[in-house]
Image (cartoon, rainbow, N blue to C red; front, side, top):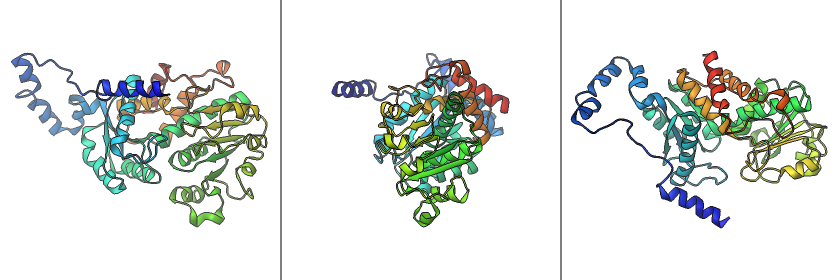
Length: 386
């Protein structure tokens, strides 16, 4: 591990981070300068003054997004602040460009006040074709995304929230094909009801799942504890996304006779004896990062038919990188103002459909992260919708 740490630190130190901002024009002659700067630059300025939409044609706005964080919920590291969050934002930017050609500028804000973040995002929005929110703690991230979607004329996407929901949904659709179960009849338990968990529950409901139960730090979700819950869990109960009429006392009780466990919570909370209580051919998505709710070997030994995690060293990696490059490219190219449930569902199906039924198996429910068809398929699906 110490060699790996040294390699990683050297990689980041060698080029002073993972990103560069470089001109894409020649500036070798006076004519070059005249065209790119004065007096030539006045012409695109005046065109944009007449029609703001022309900024997409004449400036980097047309191919650039910003990735905004406050450093309050970074990977598995927690609230480490804006400066410490920058390596992750640079990494996300590099992934976005590598897979889709969309440029991203990281923006780590020195505030964790939702109103300040909303105000800042609105003030800088003329520079970008979309905004990605990243590693902002719940419930603040949900309110920020919701407000910005309403108040801006460019798309706003929270990857930890909706990227996770989309890739989990795609994985579940294909896993159900393998175990031959109907999405309308399965019983699902979601552990972890923050931004990701709540978004997963809402999207699965839109896709046809009718029976979803919740589990969080306060235990099994039921109405008796309503006053103790934060706004996210209350919204799930109020909107009837979660069933609360159960007598389960703990996670093991809750999983009895259920078909699917989806974890976006904490490592090692799912035990083999709990899986043994589930229905035959159970599906386990244990996505706590970097250590899952249960390691796949134990889950399979306990009787789980399909197991997915967020890790690349196990089969069925359920990773947001399958989502955000294609989604961002699709909404930018088609000038989509808001990322609606319809856009999310289109993306879910585009990802799921890339694994043909004859190729589906217990260890192959999603396309490979490096499959170049993923971005193209998502972009084409969004284009048809647009």
